[in-house]
Amino acid sequence: MARLELATPNGRLIVYGWQSDVMNAAAELALAEHVRGVAGLDRIEFAGRSVWFKRSVLRGKSRARWALKRAFGAKLPRVAEYYNHSWLTERLFETPLPLAAGELLARGVPQMEFLISAHVPDAITLETFLADRRHAHRAAVLDELARETARMHALGFVHHDLYPRNILVRETGTPRRLVFLDAWAGGPPPQLRGAPYDLACLFLHADTEWTGIEVSEFVARYAEERAAQGRPIDAQSVMNSVRGARSRLVARLRKRPAEQRGRSLPGADFE
Image 1 (cartoon, rainbow, N blue to C red):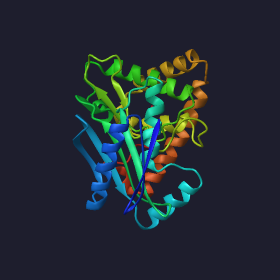
Image 2 (image 1 turned 90 degrees about the vertical axis):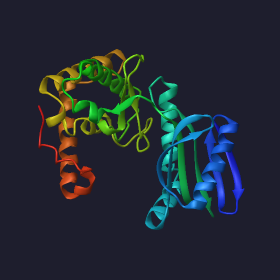
Image 3 (image 1 turned 120 degrees about the horizontal axis):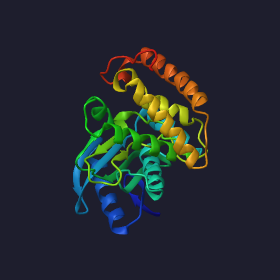
């Protein structure tokens, strides 16, 4: 992985990537957007391909908080997302191909951050997919989800935000249909949170999105794949931990309604 550093009138720009021409183009794009002061997520044409351009402007308390975290070795979210997606891609997980990421620093204090990753065509979120219980490929997709999640956890990687909205389901015709998004908060080992937290995120709305049989089959397949990867688990013990973590997530949502993202509060428990 390469690193490009540029001294600019607005501060020191650091770009991470794997192709120099892409990194140079990313630097130009990031500086132009910083001048405009625009933040958000846009689909654009970049370096001859359709990409998602995600950027954030850091201000106030957020700037101070991330300056402190960065001083202690933490990566800014978009840079962490680039590294984590690269880590997953190298291990044959499907993610939006990370092309470049970067940060703009003024006297060592972060001003903005960005990530450029390839657009994934013909895909919907797992959240949307789960809403249709009649989908012809539902069982196959949930089986793949169990296997890939187990493989991820067997390698010690914790996604940390493994909600169905952060997983894409591609159309049929690809070897792997699931694409993992927004893996910035977790990462490879060591991690403070473990696999039960990821599964709690996945099952947050299981009371309405999953059937009891689907949950049981998922857990069985997950445990089977963990054993196949040389990292066996006790399924009942893990699910007890999942229920506890999910209960805490539900309690947090009760206190922070904005985090429900327009959805109804999850049920207290699931089958």
